[in-house]
Image (cartoon, rainbow, N blue to C red; front, side, top):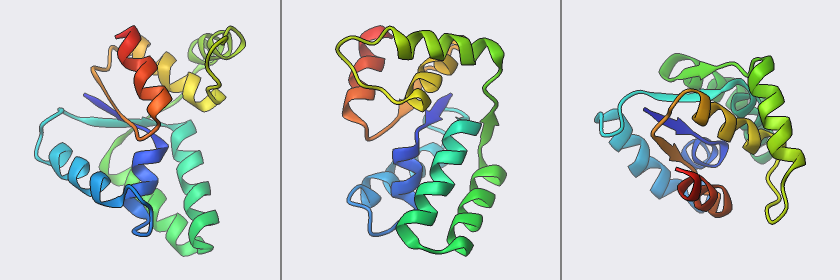
Length: 132
């Protein structure tokens, strides 16, 4: 299983994104079954459609992106337990500056035993590999 972060989803959707080519290659490998099923979270969904709206200035593009995500990958909801675990991670940060959404990703990956994280966020990727 692979968890898709906002950075990958936005790069895949917005062809002007500097990581668009890498995102297309990654999504192609996910479609080919290299990582098993793909999932994201409701928080990442929110962040993705918002960033697409801001970058493209097109509500239609944001809606189309949201539909694509909903129809093609699983969307895991952040429940109360994940929320509290993410809040603890967020509050206890010392050498990192993760967003609260990033902390929910880490909490979801841990709770659901997700093996892979697709992200272009170097700090998040580095931390994920360190705790894995």
